[in-house]
Structure formats: C-alpha cells, structure tokens
Length: 167
View: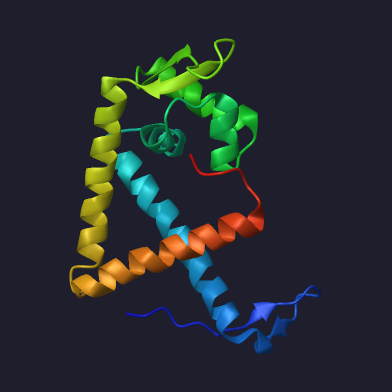
C-alpha cells in the first residue's frame, strides 16, 4: 500500500499551499518515514531489552574512528548534554570506553568495546530483518534504488541543515 498524500504543505499562517506539489508530497512522505523509523527503533530496543537513547551513538561509534563527545553531539545534531548522557550509558553498560584521542592527547575519545560491537551487530540484524520483511515483495532493483535515493536525500538535507559532518 502506498501512502496517499495531499501534496500540500502549510504556509506561515497555517493555511495549506497546494502549489507546493511534489515538494509537499516529499515532505509529507519524509515526515511519515521519520515516524515509522522511530517506531522501528523503539521495537528493536524493546526486542533487545534496551532503554531508549544511546543506539544512535552506538551506531555512530561503529562507523567512526575515535570521536569525542563533542563530535558525537555534532554528528547526531543534539546538544552536548544529550550526547554525553547517551555516551555515559554506553560506557556504564560496557559497550564503549573512553580512550586518549589519537589526534590530541588532551582529549578523551570514544570507541566501542567488543560487547558494543556485538550489540551494534545485533541491532543491525534485527533492524535488517524488519526492513527485509517490509520489502519482501519488492524487486531487488527497487530496494537498491530506495537506498540510493534515501542516501541522496539525506546528503542534500545534511548540506541544507548545516549540521556537522557525519562521522
């Protein structure tokens, strides 16, 4: 089933602007995708018995070298206090550790432990199972194209929003 969209967006005064056309439909779909993606994350956390928060930082640490908490905050687009809480949870649970930064010995960097890498692998397996189930009736080319288009949109929005570079 394809999500139907009115292809209209709200103007500054709250009225609908039907001239938004395709951009409005894209925005509606993006907002819907964001809500569904959050639900997916919540289901994965529940299935693995994890509290909310921290999975984004976990996945970021898996992809990056040895970022600082500040680097994590910028890459996730959150306040330093939020990133600090997420990182503290990972460290307390033994999923990450603080180490001396290879770039600046005055800075504490973060890296995943073996347990953290295993947790991140489990998160990807469970998430991947859900995505495979959702796209089971899709052609392989459609799955590949969806990934490419989502990556292209994420990159374009990343440049527009002006957050820090993805690690």
